[in-house]
Structure formats: structure tokens, C-alpha cells
Length: 337
Ligand SMILES: Cc1cc2nc3c(=O)[nH]c(=O)nc-3n(C[C@H](O)[C@H](O)[C@H](O)COP(=O)(O)O)c2cc1C
Image 1 (spheres, helix red, strand yellow):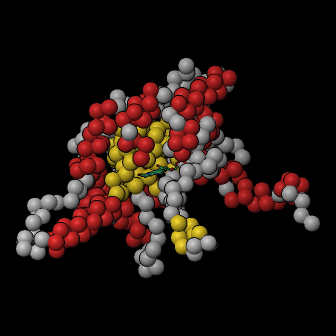
Image 2: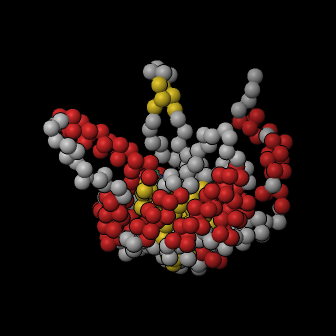
Image 3: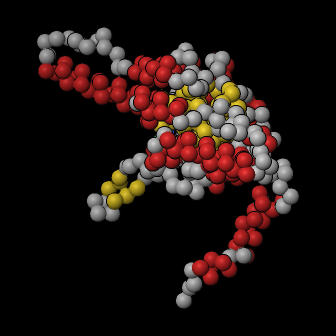
């Protein structure tokens, strides 16, 4: 087997396939199988502050209802605090004990103070780093892009100052110039970048005329954004470059690395094809490296990044214009009347 070692947020990994944040980490057996099948590291599902507040509200409602039923008792539940992040931290610690490979936590808070408070508590569990999940969906017509970006950088800096483990970010691609934001975050000390978060959009059922919410897995080939931005970022930032989204095969990992990624995060492919799929992907990477005479990932990482591609149009808009001009193949495949 070729040397598949890589570095993720300054931490050495034996393979470049990192399991992205998801609920699959909640089962001990799954965790063991992820490790046995060669995952380089695991990211634990996010601690969502929003969820804690919802749980707190539900708890309040239950205790109020009990209060009403026992009107003679005055605040019988005054000692009970909602679980807070205790349950999350407990699960995280348990996962840390089960796994020998690096484990990272993921955090999505609401208030600046909570980002720091939760990050400190997470750091105490012994995880190898914290992923800040900047999952911001624009809702406010009055807040400028600059304000949103400045706030996120401020949160990043505060968390970095508060803990002594690597801190990095998972971003959405929807910024006016995500490269500029990444550069600023890189300068602020982010140890790396997950490219990109997948935002879940609302769906409408036309029969019931109501919104439906269901978790969809990504599809194969939904990975071009990660491919593009790895290529643009390669050799331009200090932090790790991690492609994510729609990565299903060993060849997808190879493409990301040719583009400039240090590692990848995978979730949907493992849900669909189970942990054994990781071993299959690693074998595909190994076979490809063997066929191309590469003995380590460093031998080909970034070979097709913006830094090295001779055709400068590849990463520019001209590529898009060129594609439109060469759209004949589409018309041939899908003839119009
Ligand atoms: C069931 C499920 C749960 C997820 N939970 C989280 C989460 O807690 N935090 C997070 O940042 N991303 C979460 N994600 C998003 C994944 O980490 C990942 O970014 C996304 O699924 C794209 O990668 P993929 O195409 O390999 O699935 C979740 C995805 C799925 C399918």
C-alpha cells in the first residue's frame, strides 16, 4: 500500500479520508467500523446551540405543566437545569475513548460568548481540534456582508484565543468573495478550511401545500466547487484545504488532491455504502497511485492547481464562456425541434 499519510489542521493522519460531521458517530459500533476501515479521522456531529435552547424551552414547558398540576407546590423544579451541552460532551468523551484515530468536534453557536464557552468545554474532552460550523443563511436585509464576515472573524479569533487545540472553519460557498474571507481567516489563525458546508434548502409538497423537511444525502459528482476552490487556494494559504461534498470514489479523492486538497471529508457515501466503503475508496486511491508511479500523496498534490496549470483559462471565467461557445455537444446529445 502506498503512503497515504497527510496532515489535517496540523494533525498527522494515516489516510486522507475524514468522516465529516454527522449523526453516524452516535453508535459505538459504527465508530469502530469507521476506524477499522481506514478513516483518517472523524468529526463528531455539531453541537448546535439552537438545539440546546429548544431543549431548554421544552423542559420549561414540561416543568410549567407540572407546576400547574401541583399548584400547591411552589416551583418544585427550581433545581433542575436543562441538560445543556452535558449530554453532547458526554458522548464526545465516549467517542474519544473508543477511537485511536484523531477526533474533531464541531460547534455551531449563536452568541459570541457561547462560541467561546462551548469551545472551552469541548477542548477539555481531549478532542484533537474544533471545527467552527459557520452555517449562516442570510435572513436579514439590513446586515452587510462586511458585518457578517467581521463577526465571524471575531468569533474565530476569540475561540482561537480561548483554547489550545487547532481551530478551523467549515464555510458555505455563498460569500461575495469567499477567497478574501478565507485569506482573512487564514491570517487570523484558522488551521484549515472545509470547502464547503452543504446548506439544506426548504422543500414544498404541492399536494399538502406545506413545507416538508427531510435530510437528503448528496449525490455523486456534486463536488465541483470543492475541486475548484482547492485549486485556487493551493499554495496561497497556510491552513489545510479540505474538500467536501459529493465525494464518493477513490478517484474523487485523487481529483481533489491533484487540485490541491490536503484531505477530504465524506458523509453521504458512507451512509449509502456503509463504513466498508472507506476501505474500497482507499484501495482505489492506492491502485491509481500505483498505476501512476506515485508513492506518496505529496508526489501529486496540487499538480493541477492554479499554480501549475498551464492553461490559465481553466480557473477563469473564460472557461465558462468557452464552454458556452463549445456547447455543440449538448445540442447533438439533446437535439431540439
Ligand atoms: C445525516 C447528516 C447529518 C449531518 N450533520 C451535520 C452536523 O452535525 N454538522 C455539520 O457541520 N454538518 C453536518 N452534516 C453535513 C455533512 O457534514 C457534510 O458537510 C455534507 O453532508 C456534505 O458531504 P457529503 O456529500 O459527503 O455528504 C450532516 C449531513 C448528514 C447527511
